[in-house]
View 1 (cartoon, rainbow, N blue to C red):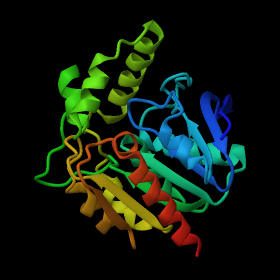
View 2 (tube, rainbow, N blue to C red; view 1 turned 60 degrees about the vertical axis):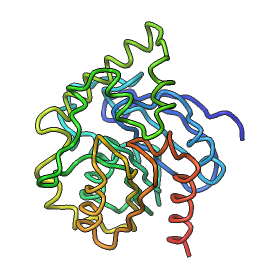
View 3 (cartoon, rainbow, N blue to C red; view 1 turned 30 degrees about the vertical axis):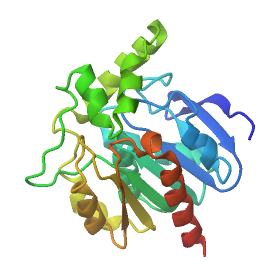
Length: 261
């Protein structure tokens, strides 16, 4: 598989950084709060089956921070315009964490451009009596350890020494995440009321050891989206795309193939 192309697209007056690689039907991946500045092994593997498109959200990474960015709904509307600008149809939309929240909100508004929807440990709703972890209060070590079931991955993350450019990018991402998810914490009180509008085939994937958004949120999302399926990955934290890459790819590709039959 050749290396992905890197480009910038201007949509709704906002210049966004984008990675793209592979061939086949389009798969649009919406990243979580830590950003998506590199071509992860997940994308490399998915690009063997799909035309994988990974933008950095407005306000994150190398993308602009537009004046119009106030909430997740703004990003949902933005990605509708993004798909229009790139001429994307029959899109397999995959979103993780914050990106899953954006993807769900996008699908509530209009599933017309979508072929499938895959939500990986999405934020966006609140389950009474099941509190989320508060990533805004965690220390850096707590943050790393609470993201993973496999603590060797947490140790690797803690040993990394970012350069100045990466520090600036992380600070920018943290500011954007706080703006979008600070109050109320990582959810929109109105989203759950409208998830019944999601009309495309939907797969929800959760790690059984997620300490940020507990696994109990998986059945809640499943029950709010008509016909949605739920898969729970064993021995996995909040980042299945990092911790259980092969299992996640297998679930996504199988789901999309079954929809196409």
